Image (cartoon, rainbow, N blue to C red):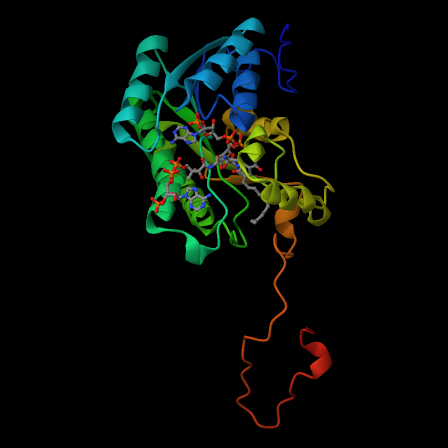
Length: 294
Ligand SMILES: CCCCCCCCCCC/C=C/C(=O)SCCNC(=O)CCNC(=O)[C@H](O)C(C)(C)COP(=O)(O)OP(=O)(O)OC[C@H]1O[C@@H](n2cnc3c(N)ncnc32)[C@H](O)[C@@H]1OP(=O)(O)O
Ligand SMILES: NC(=O)C1=CN([C@@H]2O[C@H](COP(=O)(O)OP(=O)(O)OC[C@H]3O[C@@H](n4cnc5c(N)ncnc54)[C@H](OP(=O)(O)O)[C@@H]3O)[C@@H](O)[C@H]2O)C=CC1
């Protein structure tokens, strides 16, 4: 099958002569970002643990007329990360753009997350993101400038049943602000994109029940639907580009307005387990009909 070039809204040579590293670039949102950057002239290196999806994405980009390459990495391993960034700079001579897109988690009530499960998700989404960011700065960007975008998540009102990832992504948003301040004088911009529910290929890594819950999110999104991989990619590409030259330390929500609603992602079970406080004996008692009905 012939692969058409990515139909980006941005202009063709926006990233000509620039080198981009996209972690998790073999699948889903990362793959869309890799395609879009390549269509806009960047040489793109995609990196992840599984080689097959990386090879497929590289082949697609090459077929579409772009320039791409891959590196195998586990971003949770500091040595792997150093080797990845060194390989990019050795092979391509520079590293202008970094997209920290690799990430993931599993749904679970907090009390059932094992210590190792918590550590694994925090290691991947927070520590891994830091390791890659630090390596890119030390190997190239600290001296030559650059632009970094990390993919986080809609965690502003907490992330029930994915509390590990909520904590890790909030920490990345905070780290984004710190690094924007520390590295501004080195010509490095640091931003993040927070997707809401995106119908990405990553959704099929979850079981049917989770996917059903995710599909039902449309009713609590002002846009009336979930998002596409391209919609997440466009926001990342904008923040990487010169059009965002005066934006740093920002986390841009790409969620169709979903994070503005107070409605929880999962309903609260009806219960009467939260005792009231009445410090004043003349205070009104909440009447029966205002309490949850069985
Ligand atoms: C019902 C909930 C709310 C619904 C809301 C709907 C709204 C949708 C919003 C969607 C937002 C986010 C979307 C996405 O991010 S899309 C997809 C991104 N991709 C992924 O998430 C990839 C899938 N996940 C994983 O690959 C893994 O979860 C992980 C990232 C953790 C990588 O695991 P790894 O293979 O390295 O880890 P191990 O298998 O070795 O396990 C390490 C410890 O973690 C425990 N674990 C792993 N999976 C689970 C599980 N499903 N449940 C419980 N525990 C798990 C595992 O047992 C290990 O711990 P122990 O050693 O103690 O056993
Ligand atoms: N889809 C959605 O609704 C949302 C997605 N996100 C986030 O967006 C990002 C992209 O997700 P999406 O495209 O949907 O899902 P995918 O599961 O397709 O993407 C996750 C990517 O991360 C890579 N990855 C995972 N662990 C590691 C690791 N230890 N080292 C290197 N690479 C790793 C995976 O490749 P491999 O397994 O080969 O290593 C995969 O390519 C993720 O961070 C995700 O959590 C955030 C909010 C909502």
